[in-house]
Length: 76
Image (tube, helix red, strand yellow):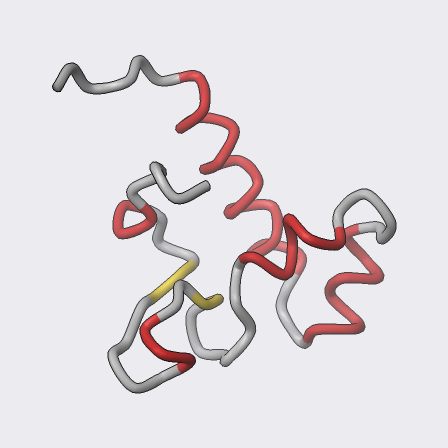
């Protein structure tokens, strides 16, 4: 997940001083890592209820991660 350029995902933001600059769902303090840590055990609806994010935000993050995983890696 560290190699994904989250700055290109409109559902998230990283603000210095807010959760130590971690990527969070826009307008919240909920780190996006919460989705990946809990998706095996929780449904999208449960994530929405438990963490105060929207269904659209969760889907946007999951879709962005899936598209990023399919993209060719940049050459070093």
